[in-house]
Structures are given as structure tokens and as C-alpha cells.
Image (cartoon, rainbow, N blue to C red):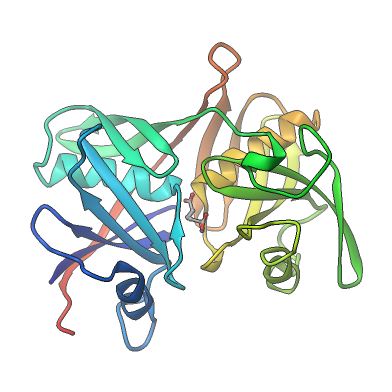
Length: 277
Ligand SMILES: N[C@H](CCC[C@H](N)C(=O)O)C(=O)O
């Protein structure tokens, strides 16, 4: 079975073109192929499928086999894939996801997609839709004690759940120690992605992320979108910022005119391969 390895700000997935390949058990395949030593090595698996309601459909699976409703970095990579591999000639593409239909604007130079702007839709702030067990609306300052620290979380869904907290310095923060416990905190019925955010200034944030089902990744597109929304709700930044992640930079804007969040960033091919198992 042929696959393509791609990454967006270092958030790397295995992409399978399901117009040409059939995948019977994606959950098990995601675990096997994502494995660093016995497989390809990745943050998870992404299927590119036909759709009846959009140009294409995405299904994404974390490296533990769990399915994510939405994946911002993968959406940008799919935009690059479908244009440069000849599945579309359009520079605006729609993609059906479990988090709704997303619109992608491809930035093209000499037939190469050099960046993609994704309309991530409206942030979801109602506790029961995130979901998070909280009496607050929006869910700002929900405190949780994790080991020796008390955190205040702002919770946002971008189709998938995010718990955002602000720290003084992301570089020397122990993301695994705390993120791995927040992921399974009982107040998150569907678990959660957790973002640790440092406010550099009112137009620059730095962020590290412990992803639900994948652990710490180099970047998280839905997480960066949730981080911007949380920072604006807490009065910490403007509505358009650059977010510095371990693997690169994303530009995120929460537009007042339509209440939609827009994410712009890179997408890159790494290699093509053939899976023999
Ligand atoms: N781990 C996430 C899915 C991938 C999200 C992330 N890689 C992104 O770019 O948005 C979840 O289970 O909700």
C-alpha cells in the first residue's frame, strides 16, 4: 500500500490516498505505521477520501489509534497534496471533517502550494459541546490541581477539545509531566488536548502542546487556534497573532466580522513509501 509522509510545522502524519488505496482497519493501521521502530514513525495517520458534501473528506487517527474530529496541520497538508498530486486544479478547496466542512485557500507559486489558509470555523465555547464538566460559560479559569500545581484552564473546542493554560516560560516547562495527566482528567469526558502558552507580547504567543492520543507534538493547528481564542478571552492578546511552536510558526486570526478563526501556515512533503505489512 502506497503512502506519503508530510508535515505541517513538524506535526507529521502518514497520508493515504483512498481514491487509490483501501484501508480496512485505520485504527490498527495508525498504531502500526506510526510506531517509530517497527513502522514508519509519525504522529498518526490521515486518510484522504471522496466526499458527497465537499471536494474531499479527511479522517485522522492519532498514534494510539483514536480518531480526532479535526486536525489543523493535516488539513493544510491535504490542501498541498490534492493540488500538487493532481486531484484538483482549484485554489480553493472544501474538506469534510468530523468537525464540519472546512474551506482551504491554497497560496500557489509556480504550481507549488507554499502555504495554506484554513477557515477553522467558529470556536465552540459551550461547556457541554467542548465537552468539559464545568458550570462556567465561557469556560475561563476552570481550576485543576495536577500533582504539585494548580492550573487555570480556558477550554475551547475547534471540533476537538482543548484545555489552554498560560505559563511564564514554555521552554523549560515539563509538558509531559502535567499534560499527560490533564489529558485524562475526569472533567474531560472525551479526554483533551492541552496547550501551554506563553504570551510574548500582544501579537506573539509561544506554545507547546500535549496532544490527546499522540503526546507532545511539534505543533498543533487546532491547538494554536484554541490558544488564540483563549488568550483573547483572557484579554492577553490581539485577535491576530503569530504563534511560535516547536516545529514552526502559525498565523492565527479570530475575525470579529464572522467569528471564524483563520489559520495560515506551511505544509511539506517528506517522502513517498510503500507499506509492505
Ligand atoms: N490529537 C488531536 C488531533 C490532531 C490535532 C492536531 N495535530 C492539529 O494539528 O490540530 C485530537 O485527538 O483531538
